[in-house]
Image 1: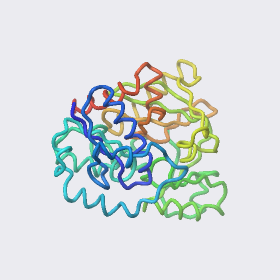
Image 2 (image 1 turned 30 degrees about the vertical axis):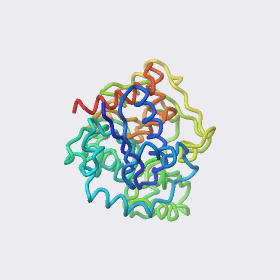
Image 3 (image 1 turned 120 degrees about the vertical axis):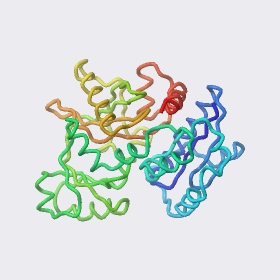
Image 4 (image 1 turned 45 degrees about the vertical axis):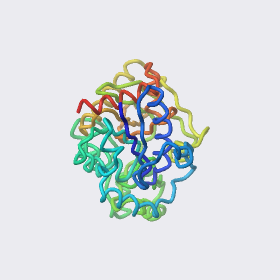
Length: 332
């Protein structure tokens, strides 16, 4: 297939997107596909410059991206379709995380371009990215999720959820801008931090328990995994710094608990009308209940990311996974 990988972008997860793209590109080429690369902030990346412009490393904190925003806006306004490698592609592989690449904006542009793309539709992408709307849909589907409120709110209102609380941007990924607040005195600073990344801020009851995840591929749940982070939550540093978390696939769970997690993961995926693949994150409480934290419509796609590990545990290699993600996009 002729595949063009869209990566980079201008979200706080730019480095993660590029790290995913580097490995996706190599995997697809190893399967014999013709692969081109476009940075949605900078434009077409010639193969001769890929090693210079695309780094597989992810830093310990999100990058500064303000200077790239105008470049991305210009590319989207001038039209991705003006790029021959986009027009001529059989599939566009979206290796983007957060921002316009994951919230449905880019997907809406690509619907006009008319080339099949990986992941989910513009509507589904927007539903998954907006944590407030996603949680409402989880509840409607009978999937447990933590109680929450949206800012602005007073300390008295927040306290009704119980301490500690999780404060986070409503439409961000990789736990960027997230804080765990243990008493009212820390609430204002946490709200201010989250507001730097999104105008909508969510305040959510903290759910204690084990960090559990399951991948979804082409309508089927993959292996269930457990993440044991060095920090209280699986934050940006723990996600992308070697040695800061332990990731176990398959998770050490009884068979019936594994099946229940897979059932709920697929139900959460379907409740948001998601497409070819996703990753669903849960907390398994001490009482044995799975509480859905969120669904990632475009999860990380390095070989050691959680979705590829979930696939590998059921015998799907990273290269095969990348290829199947592409093939799933052509069925839509």
